[in-house]
Image (cartoon, one colour):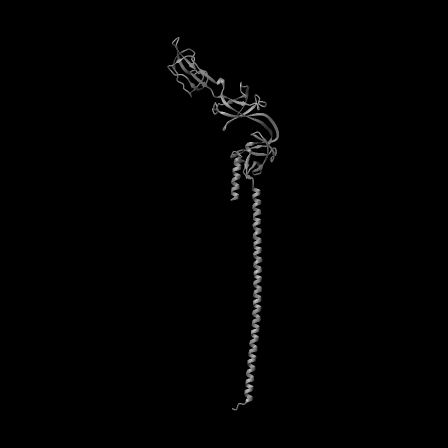
Length: 351
């Protein structure tokens, strides 16, 4: 076979064309692939941004919802506490069983009080000095200091020096042997043998100084008090004292229970005047809560605390200026139990 130059040229041209076509097709495919990749990357980036925006919005909405929920919860919590604050739920029967006694607010009197100081003494007619009627030998003396005797009891026996007969000496009053000055076997002349004192009825002698004398009078009411006890009485006598700048007010003191002691120092609150006021409250009802003076007023279902504005007081009653109306019922006796219960409720709520 004979190969010519023309044949060779044709063949080379055909091969060159085929290579060019292949390269063009390859470039086209590469270009299309890059374009698709760019679009996919852009779409992916936009999709990511959209998801991030949605997540941020979702988180913001969640935070806002939770914050609103917490605020709402706090508002509900505070509102509930306010509604319960100062209220004690207790039935009438339970209050009565606990010993809580109510009183009704009404008009009353405020007393003017003058405070005086004095000492307990034995009444002059409650002291007896026992002596022998006739001189002689003491043959019997069995009572001693601290013994209690009754009027008419034999306390001493004496043998008369004149007749040599024995006679009995009896107690002239009932009371306590407070002193003994003789013994059996000794001679009895005119000296004191025994002292008997009766403490069932005592006196308190109060010193009334010049600045007090214009307002102190006989028959005025007096509250006699020690650190642990009180008693009610009145001024029996008002006496001047020689060479002393004060007067003495004598006040009777019932000691039938034996709780007062001669020589004891006592305070006296003398009522020198009364003043009428529109509304008073018994001081026993007053309680202090968080620095405020309050009482417990009855309401539907129990009691509520009520802060009061008070005026004058005499130690027993206080004038009410505001915070209470006439006729309202308040806890008088054992109101401290309500205060304790309120404290427990507050502690539980805080926890």
